[in-house]
Image (cartoon, rainbow, N blue to C red; front, side, top):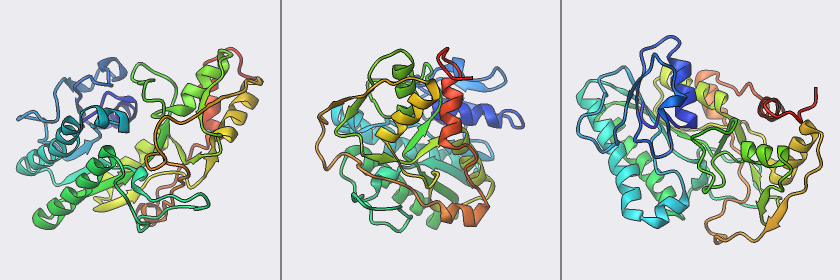
Length: 304
């Protein structure tokens, strides 16, 4: 597994390690070894390395430069890590006889409109940023490996996973784990910072459900792209109200102008996961209310 020490990868790796031998590759950019259980083999490597541990049954490829900001700082490096790194991992897997790869794409590729109810895998896509372009390139290279070498490659399009705050969170990015960041702010009496008016919506999926979806895709030897979400649209304002209700608090957000352009911002996204559910029977199990309650339980202010 690449990127296996980050907040998504470590949850997936630790889940798999209960019944499987797991090898994690992570360069330490966001992930930390301490997130992993002792039985997991950890290798500090980049996905561009010439010799990766791909002599396995399944490769989960989660490693990536994760955001618009990181790509804008150095688009060439973003391409190397997200595109060349992807090709390097899959090619090594192919040469080692591994035929199943499940990899991270993104739902931010979808064209979104203010009143759009949900997006399916057939919804038109755009690459408005270097990050999105790199994920789209992954999908096209995956299509090549599937068609040319008959490998099983499943690209999972997810947008807003969350869990509790941990050492892997990069707060400068702002949005990889916005649920837990808002909880931490409100629990400590700080006003959470919201860009715009707070009416923008997301499909928030708990990392536990995300991991089960990735495992299901691997077990089903799926090929193609699949949405991975809950099908529920929640605005930032609604999210803050839910957190305040759980913590029995009344902290107001601070609204500020978004420093990035409208063509970059994802305003409203909710995913339709019918395709994945039909193929595998997978469904999310952890509601947003339950997920918020789990995070809030670590703070003294939580209601009993």
